[in-house]
Image (cartoon, rainbow, N blue to C red):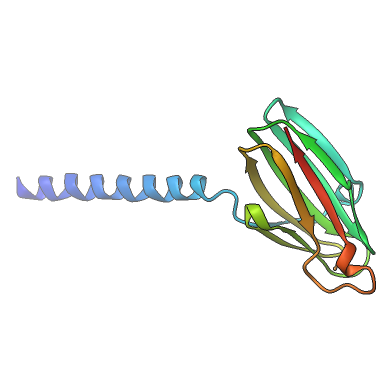
Length: 142
Ligand code: CUA
């Protein structure tokens, strides 16, 4: 009889464990990811999935980001897919703790939620040549 109890307890612990792993994965889904490369990411664009969900294909190049301005409504969740068309650049949104590398032939992804209106600056934080200091773009949330 006590064997049954042990089994039940083990089962409960197992499901708790599975649940917490799933929960943690969901909670930290904004962790940077490296995705399989596809040429489609080389074209800069902003896609609206629904009112609060957007995708941004950001292309870094000497010395600018495209698109250079992204307009989204407050409360939006944005998937940033980042690549480079030349050397290695950085993709940093300091206020949002986003810290990605923009690498030719590579896609890095980060999901960010913008709960507050404002202008969020994307900066290149990887030295990439003469125009590095001025290489930035903006996410305008309102
Ligand atoms: Cu691009 Cu520094």
